[in-house]
Amino acid sequence: MRSCGASSRVDVRARRSLAATTLALVLAACELPEAPPDVAKPFPAVFERGPVSHYGLAFAGKPTASGEPFDPEALTMAHPTLPFGTRVRVTNLENQRSVEVVVNDRGPAVKPRIADLSVGAARRIGMIADGVVEAELAIVAPAKRPASSR
Image (cartoon, rainbow, N blue to C red; front, top):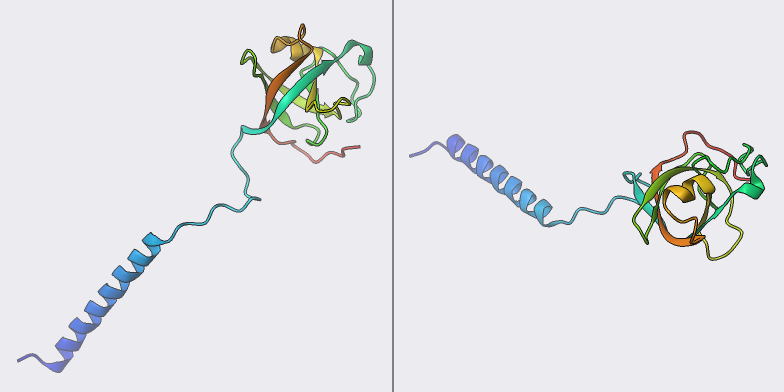
């Protein structure tokens, strides 16, 4: 015959084991929630798709919205909302050529275009002759420092 103390120890172990197994099954059956929207996503992240144009020689040397002089040969872009200094990969969807640019200006002025590229950037993705192409914008790196967006 067993003593009362040994039996209760076995019962406690069995109950703990059963409780742990039950908890594991319940947790395994639960779906994990999605990450909240404010959690940073890995880069590059596709940001936008749509028509992209280029601008250039007439604005050479004039100040951009960020304050720096416009250089048509620099790899830059005008975008209506992205912070200045954001690095973006622009892919021409008609030929799959890409270029990495930095946002330094506001635009485009013509709707429904989503961005204006410098002539140098437009040349790299083969869109000079077309003027406007369907493109995809992917953020490569956020701006290093907050900048105003006049």
